Image (spheres, rainbow, N blue to C red):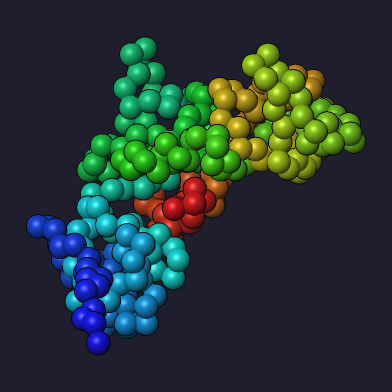
Length: 256
């Protein structure tokens, strides 16, 4: 019998800052260390695309960990925050014109320096995501990932029956065509109407320009969701940390 010269499959590399995988999972809120050991034993955890095993050590700053196929963020240096931006606030951490900016609302409630994901103009309000995870922020903003944003808008009415069909088919703007993914009339308020529309476009003032083009200028605009993250009951001017499940849902939305 010829000797088997095949090299054994190497274990996961161990880095200087590595910790036991079950400890990292527990610190990320997955469960107790015993429960995390059970997940690893049942082959429900992968690290950098490899099925993990008991005894593995990982570097939380660089490891890409999935549990049951969902990405888990284990780097405690990264933060993910939702904010209900008030009307009149500039989407900036420092405005050179002296207007109200995001830093006034965040204050010392977030120790890390965070940046906004996308923008809302000063006259618009609603959901804004802030993070120091540059890679995820880039993917959420890039049109190729087609992350939906949903808005509630008060517009000049009345709304014709064929408007939804027209918006779904696409409207030509000066910088190219745009179409919505969904549109519905929520309520009518005399000579105005409240409508909800979703689109994955990220161009500047896209909702206002779109509705202006079809003859129904926006008088109030509130963003209610970005991908799987919803504004919900978050009060105006308040912020909250995203849950582990919400962060995993954002990774899933961009295919990570």
